[in-house]
Length: 388
Ligand SMILES: [Zn+2]
Ligand SMILES: [Zn+2]
Image 1 (cartoon, rainbow, N blue to C red):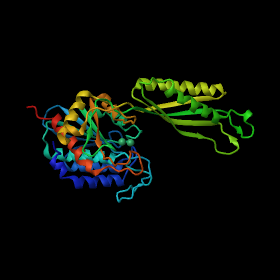
Image 2 (cartoon, rainbow, N blue to C red):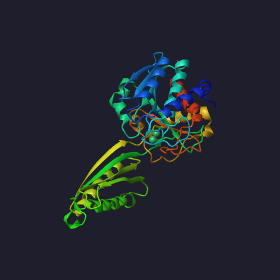
Image 3 (cartoon, rainbow, N blue to C red):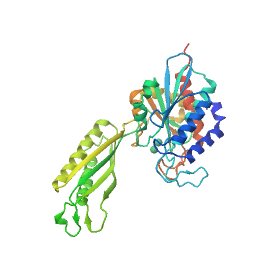
Image 4 (cartoon, rainbow, N blue to C red):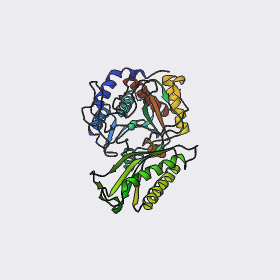
């Protein structure tokens, strides 16, 4: 069990790249500087670069020999609309944008493997380095697929990694089956009839109706879902009104639903619509629902995940690889890629003392770079081992 020595030797360089990307975060589909950075590095190592796959996404292609076998290695590049609150020198210089999910680290781990594989070329076949934009709910994976990702760059298997705060550096989780939840963003628009705040009987006040809808929706999880099934329904935004003495015409409730299967998600969608419409109708108002499903559940292919677990064990030791565990209610749009190609979505330790993902004090742990880089490098070499 060992790290790839050539990648270990790059540690200082990798950390410098990571801090540079961290200081210059870009939101989904705006990753122009990041994509330039990645493309320039790949080209300098002789990796063929294809830009504009999913707008700001790009694919690096490294081929060795004539074997048809090919694999995909995927990293995400986008940042979040968060004001960073870190005191260190590589704090975001883009006010209101922050790498609070560690996609800066994911990008650099994939670059580390690309550099190593381009220099050593100890494989037969094709490695597709997939640098995805807009993972945080804006549909980057879908955009790449719609631009023909797997038609242009066929892959027999695909691998992706996400850092895990709380998991010690040097540990991995490679677990088969459902790993992340399906996730939706929804808006309920309640249309009442506005008027004077002193004459409510002449209006249809959408605000107490919205309150009733919120209460009714709580019943979907507590009373209408089997205890053996997991559902999260959170109302995260309420908007109505502009003045003390005006009953508004309409109100909007927005939120998110998470489930581990799409069947349940479609059930919840219908139930939310029915409840909102019937509750509003009971008070003489109307309601409409917009229900978007930007994330399907990530389902790890069994054989691919066992293979990935073995690669992790070869790097970190079997005792540092979790091969079982409950899924999380977070979401990840790698799911759409893993629906088309057998895939594995790994978790790599970001340290016990790491801030939580999406927290303004979060930072990717540079000590993890050599582990992730080694994983991507070794999984490519093993998948594409020269059978002849
Ligand atoms: Zn995130
Ligand atoms: Zn993320």
